[in-house]
Every structure is written in structure tokens, then in C-alpha cells.
Length: 91
Image (cartoon, rainbow, N blue to C red):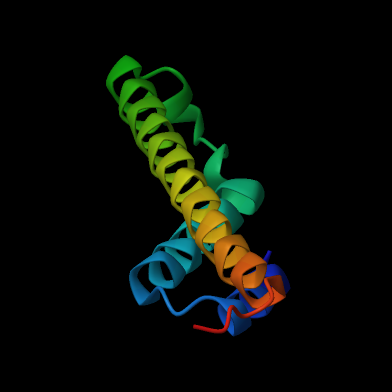
């Protein structure tokens, strides 16, 4: 995912989106490698499990918002490309 963000930042100047993408990537990396590991005490603690579930749900919400922002940015970039392809009109 890191390489994809690097490629994307070449075309996008949306610093907020790029920052959010990197935050989502960092959280994704944590979840992929450690996020579902629970100690034996946590496995039997309803509050710990609910807290973890809420964190993961919040992460999913943030990732979806980020994806929506990426779609918007890609549409904006496509509009710029489309305008470059149009022949200029002489006035």
C-alpha cells in the first residue's frame, strides 16, 4: 500500500488526503500483523473485546471516508486530463 500512496502523491497535491492515506496505511499494517492478537485475559473480557471492536469499526469508517476522498480526487484529476485533450478554441 505504501508504494501505491507514493505513486498517487505524484498526481495529487491534496496534502490532507495523502496524510490520511498514510494514517490508514499505518493502522492497516498494525491490524494486519497484530490487531487481532488478544491476550488470554482480553479474550474473556467483554469490555476489552468491545473496545477493540469499536476501534476496528472506527478504522473501517476512516478508511471508507478516505476511499471516497480518493474517488473525488481521481475524478478531479480525470477532469484535468480531459481538459488537456480538448482542442483549444480560437476566439
